[in-house]
Image (cartoon, rainbow, N blue to C red; front, side):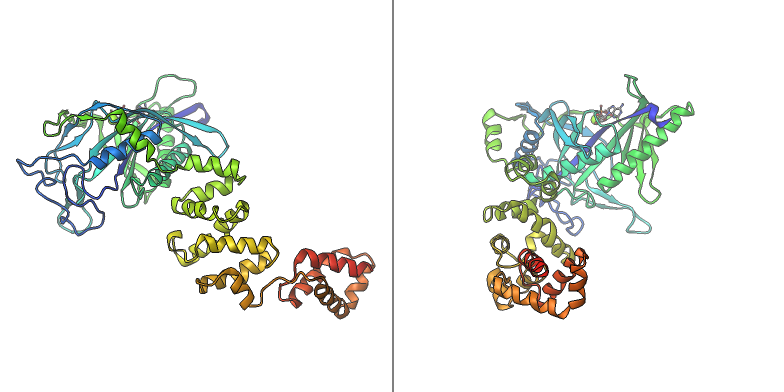
Length: 481
Ligand code: ADP
Ligand code: MG
């Protein structure tokens, strides 16, 4: 029955911009400050105060618009969206109604099955956040914190192009990665600096007309957006199957019970009575403005992926793992200037370095070793000076304890330099064979797999310092002599 239906999904994302001050005042824009301390007459909406445009927000909007292949509007004005709410002291929100700064963009999602999913971006506009009503701190009263009032937001609206919770998940992951690379939003869904409303409808497969859409809010993680959408798709299909009518409504995601519940129906919808904001001048963005932002664009994840998989020959898996976090990618960018063994560099980043960070609960910015030090370690392995296993088990951990010493010094001080001297390997192998005469006989009677046993013994005897390839060759040579 499910196979006969298709879901249609459009997402509205709000991203809080990482500007120092708010959208239309000098109030500090920061998360987690004591309630009602980052406020002034402007964010409190006192009569007679005037908003003043924060230029940084325009630059950030253009940055995102360019990254999402949008057209940037030359002439824009701001609008007032009127509604009453205790955390909106002005009684209206300043937004862009009919003239969004960015339109007609798109993003191409790389899906797990290697397919590319094209998603249209209808618009991106600038607006301001409201304050915050807090209902779960005081037993008797609702509290209002106006620190967030006037925080600059970008709202990113997609075309109804998405078809599954999976696609929505991938879209949000890429949008979050993008805003982080652009350094315009911290992308933290738990703290609400990135929020997503999902519009979901279902239709019979093959049908052209869309079904009635339901808007779902209050998901505090990308995973929960996916869950809410999946729940909603099932609920709606069941309703259609039972010939029930789907109400156009807003629903809230309940993360405890993993379901959506009705908040309000469209009949009760607000009429916002938009009109042009008379206190802000119309905005004129010139071609030069756009070009100067374009020139200053940082490197984006797509471009890095292209370089890593083609020029550096990394696997798509390795490349995406590094690129997933911008600070990780920036570390790798520095590392690759000091080594040409990119594969090894990626292995170190995704392997030992990552597990150290996970164990210590640290971020790569707190990683104590310089990229040059990792590059030197890779070089020592490539030159056969230390074995790969001693490098990971002994040298790397000791480098982390004594971060000022070079990899070579550590290897020398701890007597970890690999033995590739033929005479010395030969004598270790001979010792081992003498001590295990039984196994030698069995080997000579055809139990060839015993070579692994001898390798183990040789490694043990040498403290792991013998070059394994040379040791393997020597063992066979002596056994077959
Ligand atoms: P509204 O006026 O209710 O906000 P919009 O037309 O602005 O609706 O669309 C809001 C979001 O809903 C957009 O992301 C859009 O792609 C999506 N959307 C519109 N119609 C549908 C539908 N029938 N099913 C799912 N999503 C839809
Ligand atoms: Mg809308």
